[in-house]
Image (cartoon, rainbow, N blue to C red; front, side, top):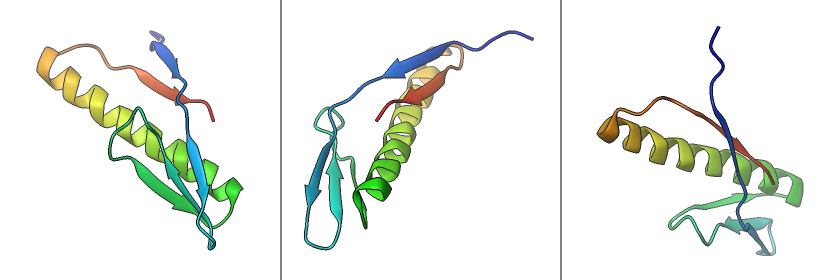
Length: 76
C-alpha cells in the first residue's frame, strides 16, 4: 500500500477569554473563528477548525490542479 504524504502545519492561535469561555482566531487564516467553553475545549475546537479550513483549501487547489491527495496534521 502506498503511503500518503503527511504535512505538519503550525499556526499562531489566539485564545481570548470572553467571560463565558474562549474565542479562538488564527491570524494567518482569515475568517477562521471558533470558541470553546474552556481552554481545553477551545484548543480542540481550534484544531478541528484549522484542519477543516486547510482541507478545504487543499481540496480546492487539488480540484484546480489535479494534484495528489495529502494528509493534514495540525499541532496545537
